[in-house]
Image (tube, rainbow, N blue to C red; front, side, top):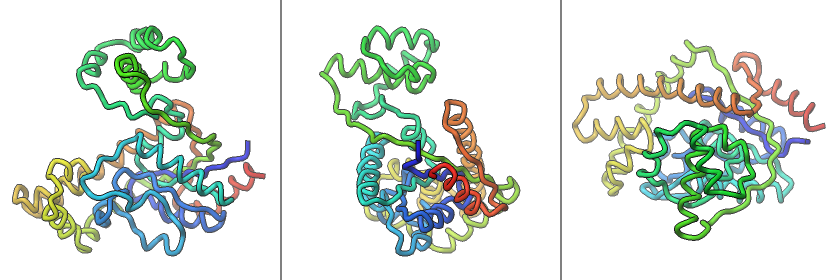
Length: 304
């Protein structure tokens, strides 16, 4: 089928936003951000919004919540579906761009069991953690006689979530769900030389600190955003808030944060490999080989 969704993913500092904007301009598209933190207003530097790169290009799912508000995979999926339908309804191309692996995975791999507002059940999850995949699949089959999506039986996280929802539904009645639009995505990923990536991450961190990231975190704390909530919004807010509160010296903060971001980039790459393992086809582009030209060539071939 012809693709109806362009997806551009990559680890932090890989240049995915720049590529997504350029592709959207060529293909008459609009950006849907897939970032768990850029949804929050006034969290600009620490989340790397880089809004100047968008110019007048329309974008979605950025600056839609106040810091401290709840956001979840379910909320992302619902808002993504609304944005996708809106963009497609105006005969534009939705361009999903970002690096939050869980949100990408939940969208591209048809997480029908995530499309529910059922809260997590820590006690049940602890109980399930010791079971094998076969035991989890058997338990789910006993709970859900109407099971249709058999791909859930191949993944521990999805099995656990499916059992969690089935338990909730049995006790409280069927939970709220919604339908995702029919997606035919064409997915691209950006690969950057590891040494260059390391330099980019370090240089970008220095730039963000120079641009006022410490002041941004201090302002959020003064506004009353709870410390534990702020720290949950990512590495930059965790380490900088500790510096602001006097728990770390500036040099220690920089070194620890820089190292943590490097590790995070590796985890992102591992997540993308995991997505491929479970069936998501990713067309990898080398940042040094004019990735836009290659992307447009593949898009034209698949969309014709």
